Amino acid sequence: MRKNFAEIGRSNEFKLEALTSQNPHSSFNCAVTEYNDYLLNDALRSQNDHIALTWLLTERSSGKAAAYMSLIMDAIKLSFTEKELHKLDYPFKTIPAMKIAKLAVDSGFSEKYKGIGTFMLDSAERPAWACNATYCAARFLTVDADIEHDEGVLAFYRKNGFVQNAELFNKKRKTISMRKDIWV
Ligand SMILES: CC(C)(COP(=O)(O)OP(=O)(O)OC[C@H]1O[C@@H](n2cnc3c(N)ncnc32)[C@H](O)[C@@H]1OP(=O)(O)O)[C@@H](O)C(=O)NCCC(=O)NCCS
Image (cartoon, rainbow, N blue to C red; front, top):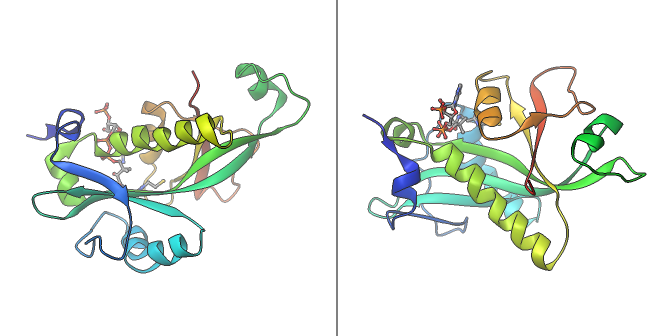
């Protein structure tokens, strides 16, 4: 039976830290090859080029990577109705956000624990809050939900409080632009 990660995650069994050349992650294997390749080949380069900052969730006992996410700055355009929904009475459409550019959970850890993906989304809110408190504003957490590989990710993000963005609808439908208001 799968354990609930929400209980384990609060203990000391896992650590979440920024990717470095020292973090072991070569064994990482999720359902989507593209995300495995990104972590292995591109994540560190993107980090060094200030394109994306990757956070790695590592099991302390094995040193294995259980999940990762890459965070970037973002801005989204909201319709009049969407702004009304969030009580954003401003004359401009573009609202600042922080984006989850990549998110993946290792399949082996997924079989063992439920809730790792949710834990990563919750964890993404912390840097957004910290940034807001000290440096610059971000109202939303955003994501381009990748439905090309698995339509189920929409349900995953909805369950975690994300809603679909009206104006950023991708006609090719490989991704669905979504947002979560981190201040409600
Ligand atoms: C999508 C992904 C991050 C979800 O991680 P996870 O650890 O399995 O998710 P959680 O256990 O936190 O799931 C939370 C809820 O979402 C649901 N859910 C998760 N993935 C789902 C999917 N693919 N389809 C339908 N529902 C899903 C779970 O059943 C759970 O629902 P419940 O609370 O009612 O039990 C993970 O499956 C993954 O890495 N997939 C491959 C890479 C990928 O597609 N990343 C997303 C790119 S946008």
